[in-house]
Amino acid sequence: MRFSKTLTHWYSNNKRNLPWRETQEPYRIWLSEIILQQTQVKQGLPYYDAFVNTYPTVFDLAKAEESEVLKLWQGLGYYSRARNLHATAKYVADELGGKFPSNYKALLKLKGIGDYTASAISSICFNEASAVVDGNVYRVLSRYFGMDTPINSSKGVKEFKALAQELIDAKDPATYNQAIMEFGAIQCKPKNPYCPICPFKDSCLAFNKNRIDELPVKIKSAKAKKKYFNFLVFISEDGKTILEKREGKGIWQNLYQFPLIETGNSMNLEVFKNEIENHKLTKGLHFELSLYNEDAIIHKLSHQHLYTKFWIVNMEALPVEGISVNKIKTFAVPILIGNFIESFNF
Image (cartoon, rainbow, N blue to C red; front, side, top):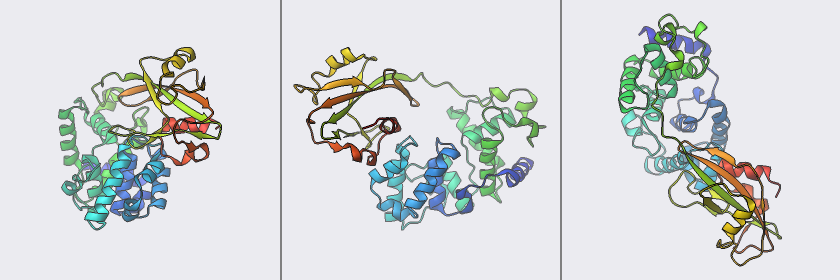
């Protein structure tokens, strides 16, 4: 009880003024929580504002085309969040009459909603005493209680959830959950936490045993695989290019990209020109090839690192129907492609 009171008192004096804290409307709380998954507040805030302005209600989001949602999401990454966001909006609007489920267990059944998000929504919107456990909470609890159990192990997930549930203030779960997340975000930070002015410094085991940098414990993930991506940026004399929609499963599903050739290693101009001589879009045609970036752009994903080169393919006319380069910015593309489009002078 002392822990929760100290925490909520700190929160009342230090919390940031954020728009989703001014409401208990499930749609806006859900929207903010999905955006803030894997995303810091300063990056997610403009996206939250954009979504609320573009789609003020769950019905507005449900009516949107997926391509429009993906375009508005562009730059946030983890695009499955946007696809699930759209799918859940349609389900809530069409099947539930626009009303979100009012408890943790029912919320878990919605696409894209896991333990953390269900706990956040149910506590903030419906006052259910369901404790949130995210990266911030793991860090606070592991340091304060000196817990060595890896947070990304099945044992750790169970232990920390159980402890968080014991500590939550059942009378005001909304404030408590927001307080512990905020405390981890701005006070008990991953690096250089503000220990000298921390209200828990006298009782924090990590601080008193000089273990701040050791906790939380996390099992190291497998080394990311290297992949070599080569995008063909076609440009015709009439100012058109080629974009292809990614089909099938994957993090970039339904996003657009330039034609892609994946190779086993990084290639120079002479070798790569031979590589694409028999490509379906260049075979038998005259074209001029140049390399836009001599040094590969390294795009780091959680499970793989993409070593990327953009190859400019100039030709008189495209072999397929293209799009005007003036319209290229209207397509939803991965941030890797978006950055190139912004920097390249079509």
